[in-house]
Image (cartoon, rainbow, N blue to C red; front, side, top):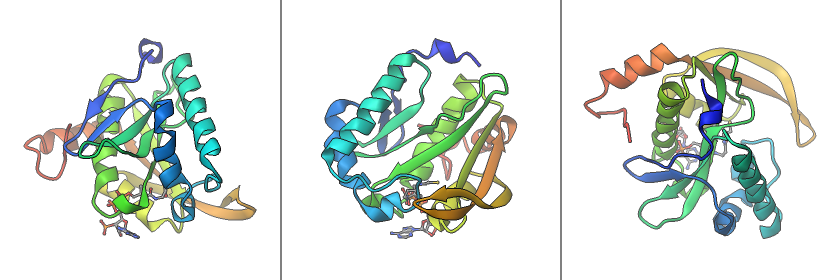
Length: 201
Ligand SMILES: CC(C)(COP(=O)(O)OP(=O)(O)OC[C@H]1O[C@@H](n2cnc3c(N)ncnc32)[C@H](O)[C@@H]1OP(=O)(O)O)[C@@H](O)C(=O)NCCC(=O)NCCS
């Protein structure tokens, strides 16, 4: 994997979305979903208390882009150009082991329409084909059924559960772990290259 090659986050397309770098002017869109306690409930972060928090988060991501090889895409709805979430590899990516961890969040008014599976399939394709990843992992809170379904629909394999593994918002929480190897993903991608249930942007 040649992470340093990726000085700029590539813009990618799926049927319904653009995946692109976050910009400062997206802060209001980020606030619109990240202030929602139901959205934050599946994550380790608190709901954003005000627009300033969202702006700081976006600034931090932009700072990481500038350092290179930071793969967090804004998800933009093609129809209205609104940023409705993010999807990408979080800080846990490892050049030596060619491994990265998938992470995502989506605005509540977009839930239940397969948006995240569509976005994450594109991100996985980039990771396996362009970054040369060997393995992608993901984790979710054990009671986050929505996120777990996304991982299952992506074709990831359940690898186990760690009891009270993290302390989030003052509570110990059990975490489920999923994983996928490059050959598993790429076999699935080529099987479905006709574009039925597996969409390559
Ligand atoms: C997890 C998340 C990204 C799922 O995205 P999505 O595009 O809605 O995913 P899907 O449309 O594939 O739906 C996944 C499952 O959620 C459930 N679901 C769908 N709409 C729902 C809704 N409005 N309310 C509650 N659950 C819903 C369904 O069980 C669905 O599974 P199914 O297709 O087998 O019926 C989104 O819910 C989210 O951002 N949640 C908050 C942040 C979060 O949890 N991030 C992940 C951290 S690990």
